Image (tube, rainbow, N blue to C red):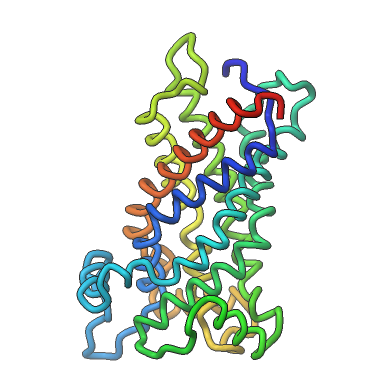
Length: 300
């Protein structure tokens, strides 16, 4: 690995926030499809499933609800994603800085993985309630029962029903998903960035197509690790209160008993189709914002 710029967790914070906004705009439609596929009810004998797959879900959503249907529940991730990605990239920057003995130290890939895992811990506090609200809003439209008028109404109702615990339902599963997945995410991005850097050049001079490729592939690797706990999390967060008294173990048992091990990869196509463009957009936004910040505040 070549010499790198001094790490600034603060710049990472602002650039990460901008990257997060780019990610939501690029990826939310397929996120809606992913959640609807993961939470659709098991068809009764003789009945066909509500959605046959990713493209069927896409067509039905578009036909029934128009383009706006694909952006359902986007207010919650936009409000949550900007600070969440800011905190995520800040956590990664901090994780890297903590492992450096001098500002010139170049980190190994296991160290980058550890820094990425720290970022996953940082984001869970924001991620868990945001995901719970987003999932509930995404599935209510598909079921036809409109219980929540919007994100704030959803928060109010959850708080009234069971207090703050209800809003944070699924936190342990969010941690189980995000800690290893974030490690994989950042390590893959850094690895590809260095691999794609031409001899004698710095990774900061990487071309836009190379950044898009490295960011998109980081998203793919991230979700390859994250899908099984994500399926369990979506099920758990949208289940009626008290349905799974032992938490994710009950969800896991029920899923494997009723639908087999393959059900842990429900929504795989939607996730992978979304992961590449969304994360390519995220890292491109991050790198552009980082260049701008380094230009206006080189010593920050």
